[in-house]
Length: 189
Length: 180
Image 1: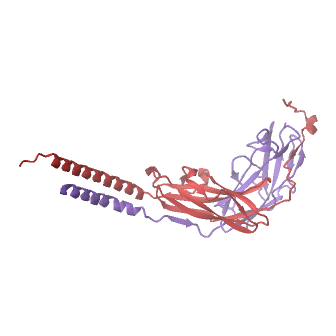
Image 2: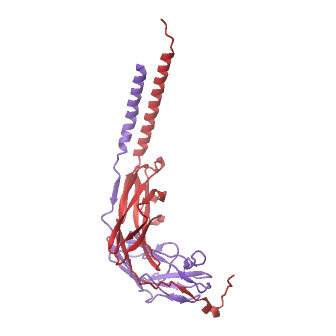
Image 3: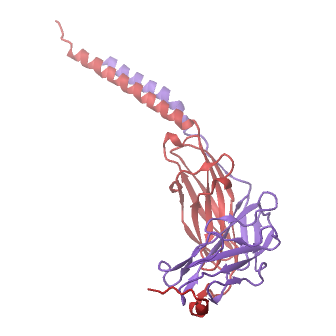
C-alpha cells in the first residue's frame, strides 16, 4: 500500500515526469468538407449516402478517426431533436490514413429503420473527425448532419398496402368459399 | 370456377388500386444538400508541452503564458470552437493509475487542475479545462470565429496535492470546431 504523504517537505519525493513527448514537435492542420450536410425526405426504411472529404494539410501522413457525437441541446440547430440511435449511421471506414498534403474520402450511410414512429422527424447529430495523436493538444472537426424524415409518404404507403392486402384476402376468401359451396351443392338430375 | 377467377382478378385489381399510389410514393426523391461548398478547418501551431519532472501542488504555465499556441480558423465557414480535457493516465498502465481532471481547476489528492487563457480575453482570464466540452472563444457576435481568424492561448497546470511519484503521466486537450 502506498503511504499517503502530504508533507510539503517531501515534495521532492513526489516527482513525476509529465507529458514527456520528446518526439519531433508537430502541428495540427486538417480540414473536412462539407461542413454541414442536410438529408431531407428520408423515409423510414430507406437509406442515403454521401461522401466526406478529409484534407491533410501537413507535411506528414496522419491517421484520422471518424465517429458520431451527440451534441448538447444548446448547440443543435433550432427545431432539431437528438438523433435517436447513432448505430443508424455507418462509415466505409472509421479510421483512414491520409497522406501528406492530400485528401481522402469516407462514405457515410444513414439508414432509418422502417417504423412509423420515425416519420416526420428533424434530427441532428455530429460526425467528429480527429487526428490520432499522443500529443497534449489535439484537434477535432465536427460535421453537422441534419436529417429530416418523410412525414407522410411512408404512412400512406403502409396504409395503402395493408388495405390492399386486407381487401385482397377478403375477396380471395369469399371466392374460395363460393367455389367450395358450388362444388358441395348436390346435383339433381 | 368462373366466379373464382373473377374474384381473384377483382382482388388483384383492388389491391393494386390501393397500393400503387402508395408504392409510387416510395420513389420520392431524397434530397441531400451539402451546405454551400464549405470546408471546416483549424490548425494549431503547437501540440506538445514537455514539462519533465513536476512537484506536487504546484502551478506550471506555458511559456509564453498566453501566447504559447496559435489556433487558426481555416476553411470557408464561421465556426464555434470548444475545448475539453481528460484524466491524466499513467503511460505504463493507463488503467491502473490516473490523475482525475477537476471540474473547476482546483486540485486534490490525485486530482489535478488545468486552465487555458486566450490572449486578449480580459473578461474571463484563465478558464478551467474540464471533461465537459466548454466554449473556447465565446465572443465576437454569435460565439464564432471567421475564416482566417487567429487566437493565441496558453495553458496552466496545477498538480495534485498528493500523487504517486516516479510515474510518467500523459493527458490530452482537444480543441474542436463546428459550423456556427
